[in-house]
Amino acid sequence: MIPFFDLSRQHAAMGEVLTDPVGKVLLSGCCVLGPEVESLESDIAKVAGTSYAFGVSNGTDALVVALTACGIGEGDEVVTTPFTFLATASAIARIGATPVFADIDPVTLNIDPASAEAACTRRTRALLPVHLFGLPCDLESFVRIARSKGIRLVEDMAQAFGAIRSGRPVGSWGDAGCMSFYPTKVLGAAGDAGAIATSDLEIGSHVRRLRVHGTGADGLHRDLGGNFRIDAIQAAVLRAKMPLFQGWLQARARHAKAYQDGLAGTDFVLPADSPGRVWSQFCIRHPRRGDARQFLLTRGIATAIYYPVPLHLQPCFADLGYRSGDFPNAELASREILALPLFPELRDDERDATIQALLEFDRGSR
Image (cartoon, rainbow, N blue to C red; front, side, top):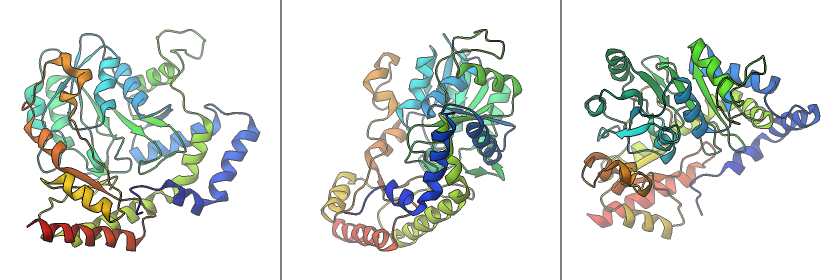
């Protein structure tokens, strides 16, 4: 079976480079926050191009904490995309705000700036674009919209750590950038982990308090935060991987180019590319997505679907009042998209077998 993703290959190849730092953390007795986390935060800030970075428990909590630190709360609206993982919109709802959806660009699959601007109302307090599948959003437009309306811009970069837009790292354009280091990400921990990047001292200070139940250095709890801390073992894993990170991005890009070249001229719609993107996923589109997926499965090739139901049609958001047809680009993408195997340790023969199977399907479906 050709796996969709196999983290065990990466960990096996790293060996003691990975396990030694974890052992040192255990022996140190400092297992939550501490010097290992502080060193990781410095590394993250360099990649994100920000003054500060703060490790948190996971990518979902990163969104919750960042939005809260930006002053978003009860009665506010946050404009975001319906074509993303649930966490983006659920984080908005968890802090008492209302997610307001806008349609996506049919080519990039990222939230469309014009649709997002049209969705803004007098209650809108923030924009929350997602750099989907590692492709940076049109950040110039979102910065313009946020500034013209005097609202916050928070970047969901859970799938785009290390991506660059116009020579500038994603995460550094808005008020805060939110990261996930879930094991399947381009830089993955050995469990849940996340981070928030910002160059705003006030936001950073607020994040630091919120992740430890709102407490400050004086021991007073001025905010109702939570237990949003990252543990030192996950920080050690991420720090061990950081020197290899750029090489892994290059390996992903090499596989993505082979897919692009091998599937050119077929009926599959191939993903958009741009300088500075990172290939967290390689997602093709086809009107017979289900048939294509089943065909690959019969050839022993695993795939995944991102995302089978757009967020505005999810039962948990039924009270928002959206209906089928409200965001046609997002709905069509949900019916057509299929993610292919893509990870640094994917073998060339596995990738080429996937291409050949897709070519066979394409010939048979014409």
